[in-house]
Amino acid sequence: MGYSQADLFYDTPNSAWSARVPLEEEFVCDFADWTPDSIQIKGSTQGMAMYRHYTVVVHDKGMCCIYDMKEKALVSAFMLEGNTSHCNNAFFGKEKYSRESRFPLLYISECRGKHACLVTDLREDGGKIVQKIYYEGTDYPGSMDWCADVKNGFIYTFGGINGSFKLLKKFRMPKLSDSDENGEVHLKDSDVLDVTRIESGINIWQGSYVAGDYAFLPDGYPPHDRLLHIVNLKTKRIERTKNLNDLVDEPEGICIRGRWIYVVFHTSGQPRHSKLWRFKL
Image 1 (tube, helix red, strand yellow):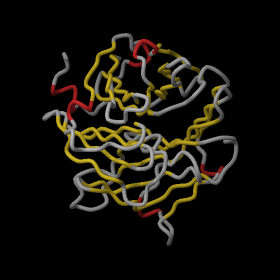
Image 2: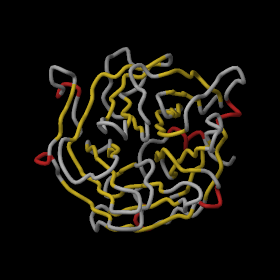
Image 3: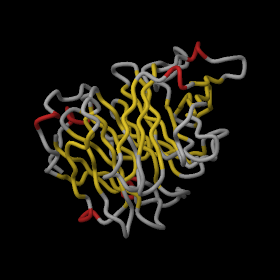
Image 4: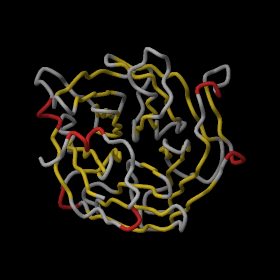
């Protein structure tokens, strides 16, 4: 496949994004090839997060699959406790729930319903929600997701209406200790640090990832165009767009490791076949 162990484990984003276009694409794997036939995968492929040599893929209604990228194998597949949401986006934070936690906290976008960010203590055999983050403010007429610039300590809301404007709103990343007596954090308009309003260019938003001054935003599903946008959060404009139509499937969760943007794709009607592609920065 042409990718090195260093690529898989390298967590620091490359600094040359503004001058580079992700033109090279490379197929990494079909996770069905790493999944025993005896394991049933339920729900459409949605969010994805990476930590060290692990890739976590979450599915609609709360199934979670953990894959070992070194061993090219499924570690475990289970239903997340208390999470029956769409799981539209996912990312790892910095904070861990306890000293015994192998993974940092996993942040999963409910997307529909109350649009909560479901902060999850992930284990190899399960996961429980330990905090819920809500945005109580205005301007989102449709569904809403969460993404983050983890390195710099910011969390973002992202959403809108298909075919209409999209909004990215920036907040300080809450800590577990910021939870109220119900284990919740409620962000308000007064907490907003910055707003990026994208009037056109993004039709049907999917996953989302922010690093520094750039947001990386997959867009679309068949038969609509599938695209990968790079948005400059300083100029508030789409700076680059990569056409993904040749890859056939629906782009979903996204993560950046070193010089590569990783995107997981959903194969319609076949949740086992979560396909991982990467794009060189």
